Image (cartoon, rainbow, N blue to C red):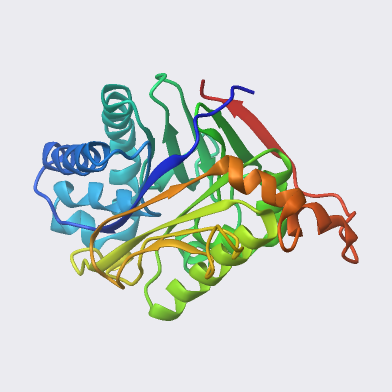
Length: 303
């Protein structure tokens, strides 16, 4: 594993979904957001869950009004928008977690897929693993395995929104070496935002790692699928003296769009595993049931 530079400057997006007239306009919007974050020194950029639903807007009002047509339009546009993300990652020399969206698989069913792009030109993807009730209603199919991506920044896992609420999934990523967990989210109610935020803070504490939350924000009533969105971007670490008294490294204002920036020292967090006030990561197996087998997590190199 390559020795990553420390510290890592992270940008988490609180991202509004806009009804833009063309895919070119969506590409321009993404390019502006990436350029802004890269210009502020961010090396890791995180966009939210279902942010890709704005790819349906250029297809017109009739498509947006239909869930089935929206899913199809977004899935068809993903290869084009992924090429844009790949180019932006290489050009700005940043790592980008693109906004997740429905991807039609070979099995003929949609999965909620987050795609991750490295400046090396390599990319990977993480399907959401646990479906929410509304995703069951949509017919979204769960993914099969957790992924951990080896990058020049360190090892990075992705827990898509609801997945962050399940400790064993994230623990599998931590045991595969993940130092940063990215949590793209899309929640309608403030209560949903707080579920994800609480889970992110718990996963940071358990895994002695950094957890980054990027939500959709604001009203997008042009799309019944993602019409109302509540959240705030945040970067969370264990609550430890000398690291963060509160466990919050950086956090935005509820429903305020824009980037939230924070810098984390991964080497300092790694030392906490054995020297911290509490040693949750090292002591995981001391809890009753802590020795039980975890879900599988594959490691994919993006170097």
